[in-house]
Image (cartoon, rainbow, N blue to C red; front, side, top):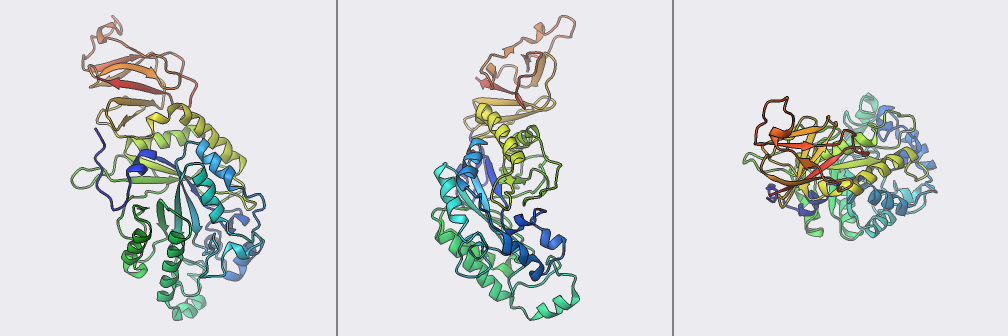
Length: 419
């Protein structure tokens, strides 16, 4: 029953199989330690923001450790902020001096990261901000840190936005040319229409340089993937003909994308697992973010959670990879995923009921069932044998007899073999 997705310009076959990726927001804003939008939130000028550029020294940066953690968590691809809204480039671009090679870091931080993640078998993606708070020709708008400064706005009226767009295209050309095969291009910050960015031209260049690349929808031109942010959709995305649309929810531990030292409302590993399951059950991926510190490490509370997610994925990965939505209706507090062949159905239970689970419409479809964490049988009970004190059940309803104790995993999964 291969899932019927709408055709895309890029190669999304691997993408809808792999389902789980790591997002990385990292740049000189990590030195502030209070959100990647710190310049905007605190209305900083170029001069005020300069101190983070001058003190960004990630001496503990080891991209191999990052890549191994992503792999351990069960992630299959990563997307790194090559340039965020502050405009500072993470690689040794030839188009600006506002780049990490001119900070105390003194080196290209992007190239070794790409190499490390490739070496661990992960696919490579670049995030790139369309807007730029630092470039001298970027038009000043309400989304600029000084957007409410009348003197600044007046002085900025002479800016030549076309020069910035040329710079933008040049940066993207470098990214598509200098780092080998790139699997994902992830734009953001599209506050202007596609005509301003010359998005059609930009995308054509990317596809010429990187055939098959997956491109998101944030250059204001629909491409391969739809990207809801910090939200879980209620149902699958479909086109007017009912075909599935490829989508990916990007999520954070705590609401901040960049490193935020004092933010404490972090998601638990169980919540992260549930979000991943929920997305796959609706035909989507999850791109889950880490914000490394100013010294170049992924902080312990992120490591701990990703390792816990990875342990769940080690046992239950086959209910995620290569799976998607099912036509069957799950029981209360459950989510179904189904493999592409259509012969295995996975029931993820967000709460653990007492003794029996009832699955309408599956009464004669399931030949065998087992807990996925340990491969132990879950017995199928004929409806008339559930209890003599209950009305005889519907023969179209599958009844599973489960242990009283919830299995010792964040979200138990019952694997059902369909006949």
